[in-house]
Structure formats: C-alpha cells, structure tokens
Length: 117
Image (cartoon, helix red, strand yellow):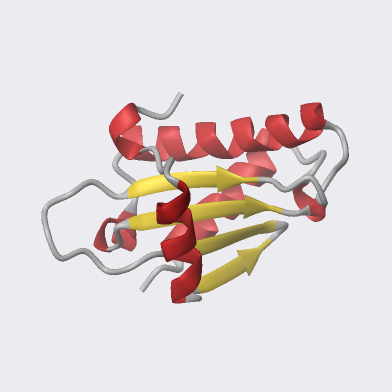
C-alpha cells in the first residue's frame, strides 16, 4: 500500500491535475502531471481505472493494485527521477493494460516516469 502522505484523494486535486492537460501515454497507461512544485510538499499520486475500461470491478481493482505496487516499489528504491518536480501525478489505466502481468505494468510505469522532463 502506498503511504498516506503520497496518496492523492480529493476530487478537487484530481480535477486540478486534469485541468493542466499535461499527459503521456504508454502501453495502456496514461500519466497526467499536475502543477510544478512551489513549496516543500510531497508529490501525491493517484490511480484511476474507469468503469468504461472494464465492466468488472475485480479487473479494474487488480489493475489499480498493480500500478500502486509498482509506484510503491519505485518510491522505496528512490527511482522517481524528475517526478519530484510536480505536485500531483495521476495514472489512468486503459483497456490495453487489463490482463497484463505485473512485470509489463511495472516496465510501462517506469518508462513513463523516466520520460518526465
């Protein structure tokens, strides 16, 4: 589980991140970047898999768990790269990512985070 201080929870925070329109897509996962940091606060991470992606909640929750675990391991190993420059990051799972293994999801998320400028 992702530590509490790294979680993005508020609806207004999600809306503000989407409003910036700074996104990247790779292998079934989209990443939205929020506003650049101005103070010494933690980068918060959110995970979304919509009902349009898959009808079954079990499949949606599994994809969210895989993405969350990948981010948790990256935070633990300090492999966040330039992600620390942003206040919020949202990972959105799409249909192509459903049914993929943890290794594939982990590689896609690592590529997305390495691509942050």
